[in-house]
Structures are given as structure tokens and as C-alpha cells.
Amino acid sequence: MPNLTLTALFRPEILAMSAYHVADAHHFIKLDAMENPYGWPTDIQQAWLEQLKDCPMNRYPDPEAKTLVAALRASNHIPAESGLLLGNGSDEIIQILQMALPGNATIMAPEPGFVMYKQIALSLGLRYQGVPLLTDDFDLDLPAMLAAIESSQPSLIFLAYPNNPTGNLFDAGAIKEILAIAPGLVIVDEAYAPFADASFIGELPNYQNLLVMRTVSKLGLAGLRLGFLAGDNTVLAQLHKVRLPYNINCLTQITAQFALTHQNFLVEQTSDICQQRGEVLAALQGMEDIKCYPSAANFILIRTLNHPADDVFISLKKQGVLIKNLSPQGGVLHNCLRVTIGKQEENQTFLTALRNALKNP
Image (cartoon, rainbow, N blue to C red; front, side):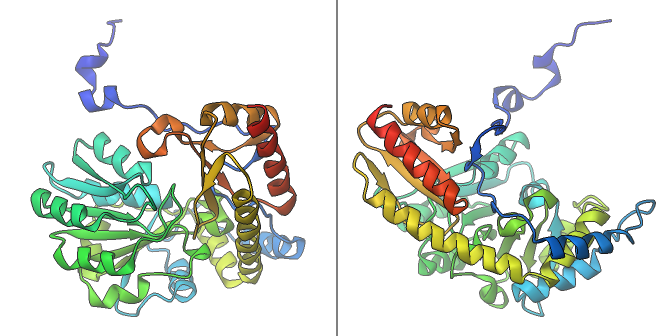
């Protein structure tokens, strides 16, 4: 059998990349992945299981997911004239968008931002251009964005709203200025919309180049891997050509539709998370040796001031708490950590562990 020569088999950009790493969270209080920490009430579980009994596992799922689409339109207040495209999580939608582009296309996004915008662009051999955020409050550097758009003429611009990992909402007026001059599509990624009193969905009829991307993951359905893209039907018609058939399985279709039509418990959980976010933020603001940033999402960004973030992260793990260490990304995220808002008792355990870590990193 011949030995494979990887350098001959794979593109240089693939060989140079690192795989997306997911930390092993067993035996930890898991506050690293922006998940809803709450399960389903028993009565909701039982009603859901009754629905699943009728799932035709021997048949391919509805390729258009018509019942689920109707539930998504109603629960997210999608304008009647806008279309929907569903994906196996937002990641697949980001991939579909970029796969549809010519090979010399440029992808643009503010940095720091969601890492998959760049990861997928590089994996497809596309050009990627990051535009640094302002360092004081992580807002858009609008003059720099507008200049980069003028010079690079990007086919896609991704704007996370609120932004991950910083948690802030970009200025809506700045986003509208970008929409006005962008030569291609502007994707407003509203993954954390359940926790933010802001959205561009209502603007969809006003901009043909605007697409709004959302997911049910942060709402409390991360295990389903379901995202959607809303926008102009003529644009989505081209993207549907790239979408693989049957990409939303029957269990996901039934479960998501059920959850969205019984979502009072999810709304209550989201409200509790927002309340806990305020309490955790207040506690963090009272600590020395750190700076924390306001958040419109279900996580908070923290910067360590007098201790290496790596040491604080390790200390937290030793105390049984897993958060996200962003410091290895460097740049403005040097010495930064990101904590997901959990249940009240989980948050209190984290705060106690953080105080200990800052005393004895």
C-alpha cells in the first residue's frame, strides 16, 4: 500500500488550519458554550414524546420542512414577503453562503467575531478580511469598515448582533450605513436574539442585500442543530441550489416545531437567564483585578488585569468550573475569558471560584 503524501493530497490552507476544538466538559460546571442550562418540564417532555411516536423514521424527512418553517415564521415574526432557508445549525448556513460564491470572492467580518466566518472561508479557499473593532468598547470602527468595503468589494459581510465573543450590540445606524454601500450580501447574525432587545428582521423588506441569520440553539435547543436564514426570495432561491436535500432530519423538524408552539417555558427560561446575567455582571463589577464588559447575550466577557488569564482559567478548572479561555487568540482578546450564564447556583459557584482564582491563580 503506498504512503499518502498529505502535502500533495490537501490544499495548503487546509494543512495550515487547526480543527475547531470542543473542550471535554465531563465532571465540570459547564459555562463555556453559551447553552441554556435548563431542561424541559416533565409535562412538556411527555407531550413531546407523544409527538415523536408518529415520526416516520423509515422515510426521508420533508425536504422543505413546511410545518417547521411555518412555526419559525410565526415565532420570529418574519415578514410575509421574506423567504427562509434552514440549515443544520448556523454553521451549515455560513457554509452554504460561502459555497455559492466564486472562488475569488472576499468574505469580511469585524474581529474579534464568530470564528466560523473565517474558518469556513479559509477551508473553501476564499479570501477573508477581518476589520478590527474599536478597542475601548468593541464597537464597529465604521470608517475602517467603510474603507475596507470600498477597497475589497466583499461578496459577504458578516455582522454578529450581538457580537460573539464580546457580547455587545453594534450601532444599528452603522449597520445601515454598511447595508447602503455593500456591493454584496450583509448577513446580520442574530444567534443571541433571545437575550437582546434588538433585531434587523423588521428591516428585511427595506434591503434586498440584507439576510438575517438565527438559531434555536441559544433559546434552549442546541442539541437539535437548527438555524435559519431570512431574506429576499430571489437570493435564497440561489442558495437553495447549494443546500443539500433533506438537511433537516425528521426528529429535528418535529421537535423544533413542537418546542416553538409550546415555547412559554423557553421564554421563562430566557427571562431568568437575563436576570441572572444582570446579577453576575453586578458581582463581577464589584471585583478588583478584572474588567467585565456589558452584554446583550447570554455570556459575559472578562479581562484579567493583574493575572494571566491562562492561570485564572486553569484555577477555575481545578475548582470544577469550565469557561472559555479566549486569551490564546491574542490581540484585543489577550487575557480575556468568556463565561456563559448558567443556573443561579452555577453562577454563584463560578463567582466564588473566580474570587479564589484571583487571590491564588
